[in-house]
Length: 396
Image (cartoon, rainbow, N blue to C red):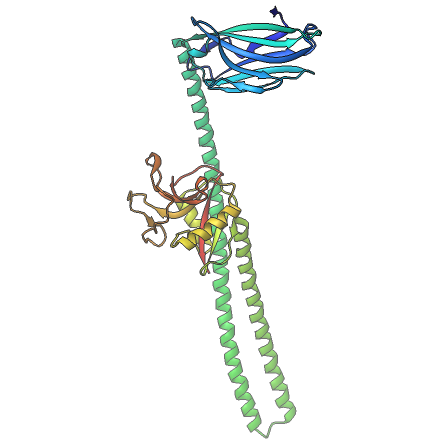
């Protein structure tokens, strides 16, 4: 048996502090050519003897013919390879190791020399186990507290930024809706006034024509001039009406462009379209309902299995970035009695199996849950996440 530095066994730590050490890695390696007596390596075997134990137990081995072989009781992750042109190794990793991983680890390398005779090398290392001290626990608790406080500050800052962004979006949308509504009302008023003027003018034209035709004392030239003048006035009024209608079409186009910028739009389903937010950094029911209302809709309220199938296909195609897509059903304030927020009607039972379950006592809104294939699930009503969207239902 040869012992030396050519066969190396290492660990990522020499001490397992129970409850604190997250991982124990034991690795045995051999570089081909570092020992002239070994012309070809056949296997590496890693064994373990517990503290105060008797005898070594096989943990993992790797051979040039059989590959990697684990113990039935390894309870860890292993890897290894025999490479007679470079570095051979065998390694095992245990997560959250307990005191039964302490002790002596031994690595045995088996090969043949230049004359074809068997040759073996051996190396070992030890790992101790200890319980944490009070000072260590206090330090860990203090570090966790510092991390939590820092995380809370970041959450508060993010929420403040998100709220500011949402407030700005709502303000801009409200202003756009008000401006569009005012312009539409004024244009409609002008259009009605012009239509009345045209009607009166047409009456006057026909009356004048009748009068001119019956008045044989007027010359034909004067009659033709008056008729042409009246026709010109009618043409101007009709041009003004056409201009107003073009402005109405432009305002409608602007509103449609705003909707396209905010939502993916579905095809028509039973006289409705569905809008899925292209991006969302914050969600609460009031914001979602208000945004949908800007475009004549509301948070989606499912009425049938065919409607659920339609929106599932739509969200699967466009909402893969979201882990949840919020809808309009809720039992907030009346636990267990689910109603649709907009129509105030009872919610159709289209839930995913064993839902709603009110996990954590805080799931009071409906959503399409990605883990369930975007099936209907109960979710929290308030999120601060850019991985949550919402779905509007917009009647046509």
